Length: 441
Image (cartoon, rainbow, N blue to C red):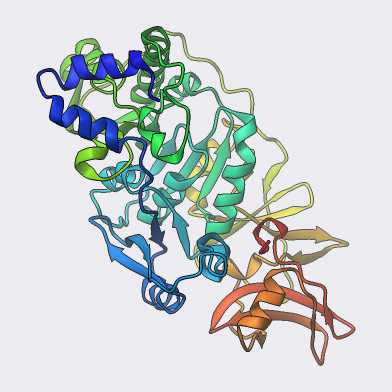
C-alpha cells in the first residue's frame, strides 16, 4: 500500500479535480515494465540476430540503438537469461531503463559526436549513463564521479564490461567540483533523489515518504547543481535529471537556479516522464546552457589531492601493439590503456583518479603480460585464434572451463567471429582468465 502522505501530496499538486488520471497514476506506478537494452555502436545487427534466435523480441524505441525486450510464447527464461547471454557478458549491450537513457540522449541531441570534450558525470554509479556518454562522445573524455565508495565496485564492473578507455573514475563529494572552475564542456547531473519513479522495480522508495525528507534532498540538489554550473564552461551544456516526480526537486530546482543566476543560464528543455502516460519509470530531466561566467562565492581550493603513482608509460610492449588513439600509462605494476588521453592529461596532477582508462595487463620482470580484456585495446588481428564451435563449448568456457590447444602462446578466443578474450596457453592448456565477475552462474 502506498504511503498516504505521498498520495495526498501528488493528488493535490498534480491531479486536483482529476480523479481518473490520479487513479491511473496509482495503478501504474508500481507495475513492472518491460526491460530495455542499449546496443553498442557497430554491434546492432549481429546482437539483434543472436537475441532473436534466442527467442527475444526486440522492439525499437525513440532512442538510438535502444530496444524494448519482449519474449516469444515458447521462451524459457531459465535457459535464456538476458544478463547471462554472451553479448551481455562481452559488453555488447547494456540493460537500461528507457527513461533513464533519455538524459544522455538529450545531452547528445540524440547523435554521436566527433567533438573532443571534457565531460563530467557527477553521480555515476551504476554506470549506465556513463557508458552511454562514452558511446555518444567517443572522441571525448568522461570523468565518472561517484561520491559513495560503496557504489564504486558496481560502477567499475560495468565500465570494464562495456569497455570504456575514455573514462576515469573519481570519488569526490559533488559540491567539490565547484573548485574546478569552468573546465567542463558537458556535465550530466543525475542527482541523488527521492526515487519516487522507481517503484516499478519493487523498491520501497515512498514507504517513509515525508515532505521534510524531500526538502532535505532538494537542498542537497541545489548545492550539487550550483557546483555543476560553476564547473561548466561558458557556452557549455548540462543535463539535470532525477528519478523523482515531486516538484520540490525537479521544477523546484530549476526555479532556484533561474532566480539565482537569471540570464547567465538558459533552460532550453524540460520533461517529466509519468508512468501512466509514458509507460516508463518516473523520471525528470532538463537541459541547461551556461550563457555567462559564474563566480562561486566560496574561495577556490588548491588541488593538492592527486594520484602521483599514475605516470605516462613509454616502454615497448614487445609483440603487442596499441590500437590507434590509445596511449599507455602505468599505475604501480599495472599498464593502463587510455583513449583521448590528451584531453585529460592537463588534469592528471589536479585530480585523484581511482581508475584511469582500462587496465590491460601488468609489467612484470621487464615484460608486458596482457590480461584477458586487453584485445580490445591492442592490435590482435594477426593473433592465432581458437573458435568455440557451438553453444555447449561457449557455455563451458563462460563458466570458467579450461581449454586445450596444440601449441603455446597467446590466442584470441572467439565465438561466431566475436572476440571474447585473449588467453595464454602453457603446455597446451588455457586455464581461463575470462573475468570472474562476468562468468555465467
